[in-house]
Amino acid sequence: MAIIKDRGFILRTFDFRETSKIAHIFTKKSGKVHGLLKGFRKGKKEFTTSLDLFSLNEFIFYQSRNPLWLVSSADMIYNFPYLRENLEKNLIANYIVEFIDKISPLNFPSSEIYSLIKESLLFLRENHSRKILYIFQIKALQFSGFKPSLIFCIKCNREIINKGYFSVKLGGLLCPECLKYDKFSKGISEELILSLKYIQKNDFKKALRIGLKGNRETELIEILEEFISYHLDTKIKSLYSLKNF
Image (tube, rainbow, N blue to C red; front, side, top):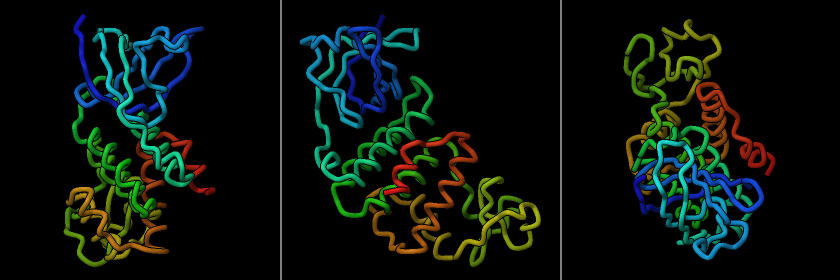
């Protein structure tokens, strides 16, 4: 049974029996891990963390073939206090960790996803919460293999330059000539197409320069929500709280 020291973000926790806790953790080296913290609820001295959602902690795991790894030590590194003082930012942070928990397979390392969680939570300190939400969604889809096709028509492979239609079902853009393949496709403006391409192409910091506002921003969030719901076949519960905020 190998011993691993690793850092990770708390995605979800729940009580286990009378004294213990199970945590879903996205780690730097091992990807998503299900960890069992025996004696956590009794205040065991090896655990100097409260396991707050989306907090960053350092763990010592006993790696096992069993899906549930034993956690022998857990120490808080940072719990992002500014996300606990602002309701909208807190809801977005909850969405981020719920999304990652639902799309990530167990024990599949991804430095891109780990960095994406970290960057998203850190950039939420600034005042562009909705922008961080859709940048996170686009990049999470990209890194997890669900990236929509945004450069060429998904049916005829013709480059989309000015006008396109977004097909949720087919997973990308259709040119006007191929619209017949999905009559429910939605027209999408050149501005939105260019913005999607820009976010996919550039790192998080550069993507924050995007200037979508008002209806365009709302349109993008709605398209992404529909795409995620269709292709991931799951509902992100925290999204409903965000929509009602």
